[in-house]
Each structure stands twice: as C-alpha cells, then as structure tokens.
Length: 242
Image 1 (cartoon, helix red, strand yellow):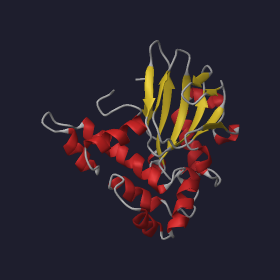
Image 2 (cartoon, rainbow, N blue to C red):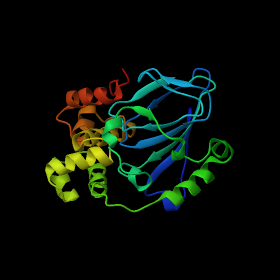
Image 3 (cartoon, helix red, strand yellow):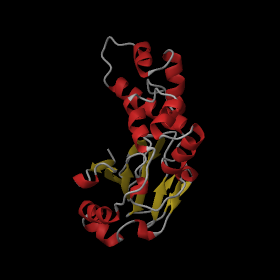
Image 4 (cartoon, helix red, strand yellow):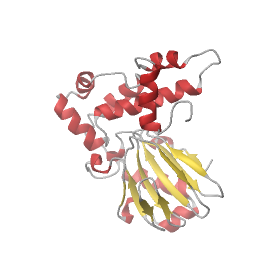
C-alpha cells in the first residue's frame, strides 16, 4: 500500500489520529476514504496532480486538505512523496487559529509554511519533529462539537440534529454553524460519513452466510438498495466493488 501510518506521541493522541506518508511506485494506486478528518499535507517529493480534484501539489508546498464527502481514487506515480498530519474530527482548532473549515470541504488549498516545521527537518526525522512541533502548539479552546462527534461515531451516524444540538448545548442553527466551522461538515454530512465508516466495518467483517440486507439493517439503512445507493454516493462504487 502506498500509504504508511505512524502514531503520534501519546500526549497528542486525543487530537491527532496519525501521521502518514504516501509514496508513489509503478502501478501504485490508492483510495482516500471520507473520515471527517482534516489533513495538513507537505509535498516532500515531485509535483503530484490529484486529477479527480484538478489540484496539483507542488514540490515543497504545504497544503490544507478539507473534510471529504466522497472518496478519492488516484494513481500514485514514482517520485511522489507526501507527508501528512491527520487530525481527529473537530480537533484541528487545538493547534491552529480558528477558521471556517467548511470553506475547504472536499478541497485542498495551499497554506503558509509556518503550518509545519521546516522541510529539511521533516525529511530527516518526521515523527519526532512533528511530535515536538505539535506539543508546543497544543492549546485549549471552547469546543462544543467534540462530545457530539464522539456520540455520532459511536452510534454509526444514526442520530438526529435535535440530539446532536442537545449534546452541543446549542440550538439547531448554532450547531450547524459550529460543525461547519470546527469540523468542516454539517451535522448531516458528518452522520453520512460516520454511517459509511460503520458500513465499511460491517462489510469487512461479513461472514459467509451474512446478507447485504442484514448489514444494511444493522448499519441503519431501510434495505440493501438504500445502503447501495448511499454507499456508492460516497465510495464512488457499490459495496460489491463495481
């Protein structure tokens, strides 16, 4: 697999899901699935064009990747080498000034070099350098979305805006604004992503005698047709891989 993942220091694990490297090779191809996360990306290799998004990550550039609502399938040619920091949903603001993350949903934009340590240091010892960098940047701030995000993931996205707003201690309208700013997705979009993640887990653990209808009902869909339609909208393929 072109993606390789590394755990952050334990003091950062409540905020940073992982560090990752994407390395290209002949015939390499990978998929980035929606997970509600925000990524900071550093291109330490050759320029890399994400054709599906019509975006080119230039050599030495630093980028901010917004939360996805659909998967990205992309060929990864030799010479590509990206380094990324993936933040747990809702946790980007513990390290960077407040911004409306909804503005970069399904997008990738260039950002200032100050978002990361120096490129030379990152090439030498990325995990240790990133740990030290983010330990210094970690700050506290009022994050009303965090508790509700955990609840949404735990229930596989099967909840209502009313319940989410209650967990945030906000009105429905305030909750919508809070999610778009701090998460980058609306509550409804994040629920769709959480249900997609749950469905992937159920499909991966599917036993020989288990039907798609059974998985659909367990994931919270009306029937297998509803699951297939929703899954294809995000994965850009059916649960069977077509």
